[in-house]
Length: 451
Image (cartoon, rainbow, N blue to C red):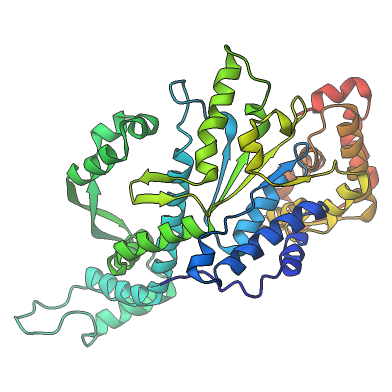
């Protein structure tokens, strides 16, 4: 039932090439994650008795904000179709303090994996569901004559003139706003709504499963437009085809064998130890993380999940601390360490020009929805890169995120006027950029420009 790609074509070189299409620079980090992913592919082709001895080499990324740490991990997970979860270490506190239990990250990863596999399976039945839903909508709009026992069901039944016309209208989209009555199964969950997610988590997975089994479902009829009815019926039809037990089995397997957990802000729980104050909680988080990363078994609503082969990528700026401030046991679980560099002015130019989903292209696509053509001259790209680099140098360095602020300020007027300028072209040059950013080019005005 696995919908995962074989992965044999994902060599380290190809992984780096794929990451290069979205992320500028940071070659060392790209190579490290590419090798880690290829080692997973290699491990799965070994005999079982050897495979179980080989665990992932977790990665620690060090570097300032906005240089690509999260983006590398996220793009990597998309590339290999792996269940991926990003969490902030600062969200967790030692058990007994206010905060989330660190094991919840594994439960969240499994939930993501279940949804991923479920969506894949639903897509597999999409064409069949569309055909059956079309029949169901025809029946709702023009009910067939009352049938006697043994008569054929509406699906595949001969079409009368009226039913044939309705089918044609459904296919052409001519009656999307016409209302029909559909029935759905809904659950009334007053108790679960009162209890927060954290409360349910603290009460335990068994309680959550018990409540879901005990809450009764009820059939509700309502009138909705054909467009909405189609979506509801297709969802219902596809879900009816799914083997939920197999979905869960496959999802747990993927989470265990190919899951990736990205722990951001790991530096926020680092620091020299003390016997009191916040350091107690920070070191407590590290000690709670340790068994998860070393390899343990976590109870989830889908059963027990092993963390031995999940790849953990931790990241932090380490401005006020350093990796050696982590407890020694945790340091040892991140044998691969890469340092991401500050972005240069030339990096900013490349970020604006090269990635497939660069922010300049994003703005061009957004304004094209209004019928407006947006063009950036080379001089504009250079000017925006210069200004972003200067502001980062003089104030808080937030990396490539500064470019979003620059673009938003430069294009504020264009975006506002776009609905009234359909069919027109806006050409952005250096003169226009400097005119729009003139108020923040002076040192005394930079404070207004800091995110």
